Length: 120
Image (cartoon, rainbow, N blue to C red; front, side, top):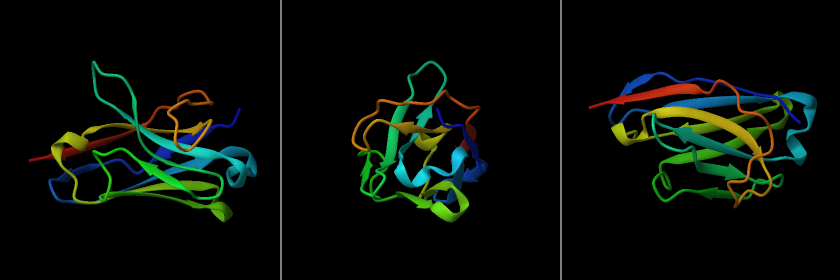
């Protein structure tokens, strides 16, 4: 399995933007489908954005039009650009490899995630 490390979370006001990063080990990002998940206390992790090995993308309705997932293969990094953030986006964000970009089925172990807090 690959190892993934998230970073970039912060506290931001409503309407602000953040870019999360996910460094993927092994130099194999180019053959992976990857997803960004988020979780709030007491709730399940949900997939919000995913990208196939060929950069096809899928977004949850809650973030579509505001979030963009992308990859930089040279840096072995997946990004999640988050714009027009709202308090409902407050969560711990995780990245993971996924079986398919259109499916929430994850492959690797969960990392520590990165906290995003959006204040009113």
